[in-house]
Every structure is written in structure tokens, then in C-alpha cells.
Image (cartoon, rainbow, N blue to C red):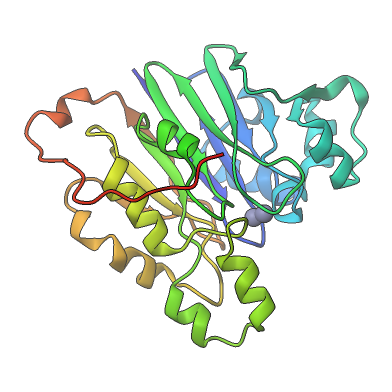
Length: 275
Ligand SMILES: [Zn+2]
Ligand SMILES: [Zn+2]
């Protein structure tokens, strides 16, 4: 009862996340080149033949850069909302396009659920991928944690969770005010502490892997982000999904027993903006 997951790249220079069982897999986003995607999957021993579909979170270039080529070469169905496709300007073969809805989609034995998120894009989505009784979340590019994000986050065994910026580094770095406001705003990105807040308040007792994702190159660093989560490092695997290379393949197992001897009562509650 397990799934295999990996980040092929994570950050404003490209995002691509692999989630699969022994026979089939999906990619969430295809923001690095087709060649690089192939290269990194081969390095990890992941077969492109297992990939059955690509799910697109939104139209920003770091999420779709390699998509047209990858979809065309491997004839992969692309689950993308009409508004996202329109805004992207991408030309995709018509018979590969599948409309994203919030109803779960079955890809072999995997079940993919898309749900809306708050980000400055036409029609952005987060995803939960479920299979073999294991749930994986791909939660990046969101300005705020909304009620739906909490609802799904708390079910996950492993999560790619955005931890984009350190507040102080953003404040004191060289970014112009307007850009800072965009990043910090309700439709920008999640800070390390916003990610921590979600994690501390709402993680499942059996959450075994937290993969900090989409770290800013200038306003964060793997060391700074990991430090924020360091007190939890002996309880679960916490790692950074790099903007420079693929992660290892993580084997995520159903592990409900973990809940038995842990005191996981949230130590504070925050009011989140609702849709
Ligand atoms: Zn992005
Ligand atoms: Zn984005």
C-alpha cells in the first residue's frame, strides 16, 4: 500500500512533480523542458511509459514551459481548465486536452482531485493524488491557505507544500515594493511561516513526508526554510524540493499507526480566509 513521488524540479524556474504506483503515474505541471524531464526521470529510474497524464495547476511559465513538447511526444492527455489553456497561449493537440473539473478523475488506479486555490492566475488548482490508500498533496503557488486547502492537507500522507519566502529576506532584499506586495498578497505565494502554520495546525497524524517546495531563489534558502521546520525533523521526513535538481524518489506508505502515540493537538488556531 504505497505510492512513489518525486519532484523533478521546484521553483520559479520550473515545476514538475511525479506521483505514481508500480504501473502508472501522473505529472503535476511540466515546467522544465521535455529533455530535462526525460533526463531527470531516467536518473531516478522512473519510466516515462508509466506516465499516463499531465495535470496543469495554472498557466505561469514555470508550470507549463515543457508541456506542449512533452504532451505531443508521449501523446499524454493534459488536464487543464479552459481558462488556463486560453491564458497560456499554448497550442495543444485538441484530442489530448481534457477539461479539469473538481470531480475526481481516475487515471488507472490513481484518483486525482483538483481544487481551486488563491493565486494570481486565470483559474488555478491544487491537487490531491490518491492510490493504494495513500494521499499525496501538491500545494504550491498560493497566496493564502483557504478552507479547501486545509480540508485536503489534513488528509495527506505526503505533501509538496509551498514554502516560498522568508518574511525578513523579502522585506530587506532588493525587490521593489510592488513585487514584494504581489508575493505577500493573498494571491501570491506562501511564506515559510504560513506553511509552518498550516503544517502545525492541520497535519494528519500519519503525515510522513513534507517536501518544502517552490522556494524563492532570492528571498529564501533551503537552510532557512528547513530551520523553520527543524523541531519536527525527528518526527517525519522534511526536505526541500530543489530548484536545481530532482529529488530522490520517496516511497510513501500507508501508516495510520503513527497517530497512536503522538500528541498532535494543534497549539493554535488561525482564522483562514474562506472562498
Ligand atoms: Zn510557480
Ligand atoms: Zn504561479
